[in-house]
Length: 579
Image (cartoon, rainbow, N blue to C red):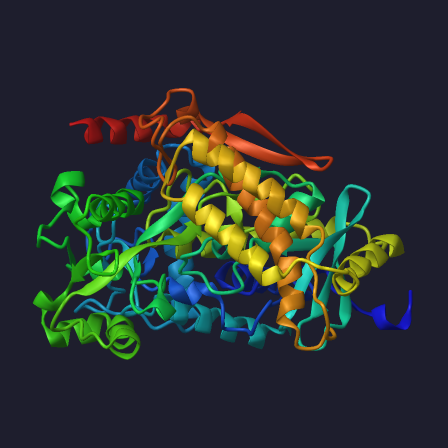
């Protein structure tokens, strides 16, 4: 290998790619079991998207509503996911979330309190009882702070501003990862017996998103390229309430806690329109329902001046709003010059979360590739067709813990990793190749074309002709991406070079979403087909699983993982909802 592509080698028992809540919790578990553990961040430690989960952690602690239980939480999660969830994952999540929250508290997390000193819980869309343990509207920030403190003091090795571009394999199993330091562009190889993917979502494939620049589908694409399966990729959650004005902050999240604390949605006529779409739950309906309702109001000419609707919490009083929603108060005051204690905010749907991801075993978080695990948003199965608010934080705690345990158990038995120099050379050649292309495609233009395609053709509402058109456009984008590159400069501080590789991951995820959306001929949860507006019995019991076959994507229906012992709980919920 020539001098300019020399690489550094670092060896650990387990590497965790992604340093949000899931990655941190997984790394803590591995380290606690005595394994040398590395945590790799694409940006800086603490700048994870977990901080955007502001409303709370869903866990049946029963501190406010004594009748709450894991069984009800399980039922709500399955009903919200339209019964496409992996039942075992939903069961483990509901049962173990309370202990994970109490564990956070033992590690130093500071929660809002009830008058008798218990962790306070608030209402949230789709939850039967007040279930979200919270810290004002800054819950994710507190979670990250607590896990970081715990992890750092436990001795986890943290590698910041490092992007992983490829998983390395020894036969069928993973044995390491190839990446580069974003600051210098120098290459690095991590050798490991187990790898955990915890890279978050795919939001930057869309034009309007609450997600920050890191969310380019890295884990999903890395796993897919290494032989893992993807599941439920058609289900993309558009959070009902993102900022719509000014343009520079379009898509920035407006937490569901605003509605949880009594916020009211109205259209340009002053009508409280959720009465038409879900008169029972109103503003606390599930996110897919509220997002479609706002979209419909705007499309039918009843939108706010900037193409959204109005969300008003001012009737709760200035002191209450500032105490319960301090981040939202400052966000609107500083970014939009709006005082939410005296008037409404303008909000609209924003691409927020992907229910789909790497298909994993519920108990161990293992993928089908030996040694490869996944947790958090980049894994699939837990949330089915639609995630309930607050379940993301409890999901990443429960399955971050399980992924850490699974990866640790595997690492203790796995042989030492053997590195294939040819794979490393190939990965390095891919990254240096972006500088060697005459008449290269501009990565920024290509990214814009990808986002516009997904926004216009694979958004909140979908239909066959638009999805087919999207596949045609994605094929063209894939062709152009083979010639994407940077005309000049070097590998130091080169964001255009970074985007060249991120584009590959976003295109993989965009194609998976689009092909699965075309295959699922029904409307369910985060997937709404104009041409198939109703549920379909077959698709109601099948997930769509995707795997790489040569250079092609292979899609196949797969029966939902059900647990016979839990069927009475599911039937009971269905009977109640039918009344």
